[in-house]
Amino acid sequence: MTTIEMKTNAYNLLTQENGAQVKMWTNGVPVDPKAITQLQNTAKMPFVFKHLAVMPDVHVGKGSTIGSVIPTRGAIIPAAVGVDIGCGMIAVRTSLVASDLPDSLLNIRHAIEAAVPHGRTVNRGGRDKGSWHRAPEIVDQHWATLAGGFKCITDKYPKLLNTNNHQHLGTLGIGNHFIELCLDEADRVWVMLHSGSRGVGNAIGNLFISLAQKDMQQHIANLPDRDLAYFEEGSRYFDDYMEAVGWAQDYARQNREVMMHRVLEALSREIPKPFTTQEEAVNCHHNYVQREQHYGEEVLVTRKGAVSARKGQMGIIPGSMGAKSYIVRGLGNEESFCSCSHGAGRVMSRTEAKKRFTVSDQKRATAHVECRKDSDVIDEIPMAYKDIDAVMEAQSSLVEIVHTLRQVVCVKG
Image 1 (tube, one colour):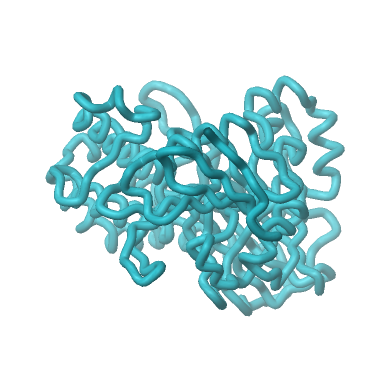
Image 2 (cartoon, rainbow, N blue to C red):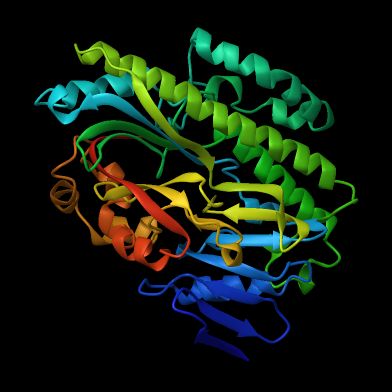
């Protein structure tokens, strides 16, 4: 038996027999019934600590929902962490204001696109346009700090050598990854971008998901979902997975740092007025796992599409392409395991968005943004996402808004 009740003004409580409670900060936003089923399945895992915390951007993911916080003791679910390990955001406020920008922002978009490889070319033997042909010096410098850890991992798992690793560092990718120029409520210019651990993180995630499923082959039929296969602490692969995930999260953080450096350089070439960076809001993951203290105990916290929001901690919650985004400050709500949403959250699949909307719809929805407006980005149309204002209202007990940003330039792969 499953029941959903209003527990407080902040969250709804989902309870079921033989499972942990699920606290959902989803008041006023739609939740797909399939996502509810995934939440119920995850909550049945015997090592879940206390309860699941569900963010207002929740939607169906691989094994576990995107937009959920999964605290565990003594075990980790690789598919819950996902394959875009360390995916997250970085935002920097500059000393520029709107009046410092040219009337046409097309050249700025093109300069950013030239500075950061983006997109993907699927071919045999040719270079992927989303990777470096010759990596610039800053990429080599950052890779030098990552190479030792990568060797430790690949000594044990040599198949990971044949991945996009060095040549993907400082590159954007595809899908919902983006680079944006934004204006805040005082018309100050911000640079914000979203990306993760790219090809090598994807390979690490898929490798360990398959190892978890293989390791549990005899028991996998008893799992609510085969993508909930897990490693127990002390088991054959647990420590190796934690090492690889930690490395991929470091890679993702440095990937964003390299791109931010390249974008700021490109911006300085296009804007005659010299500028400085005033404030780095945060460089935060929203697909990751780490050990934390909650309710007086050390637990593993997996945030699958969620951001850490400890009291006073800065975070970034982007809206969809063409919608508002927010710089926020955490309120340290322990019931959410000090977390908040990582964005607006999809209300339909990419396939459904491409069926439902046209290029004309995309042009109307992004009329105020200098961006691509072609059939290849229709799946990122704002209408494919939840209303960001409703999402922010639903999590008002988790974060406070510090800055409201609106996009003026958006680069996608």
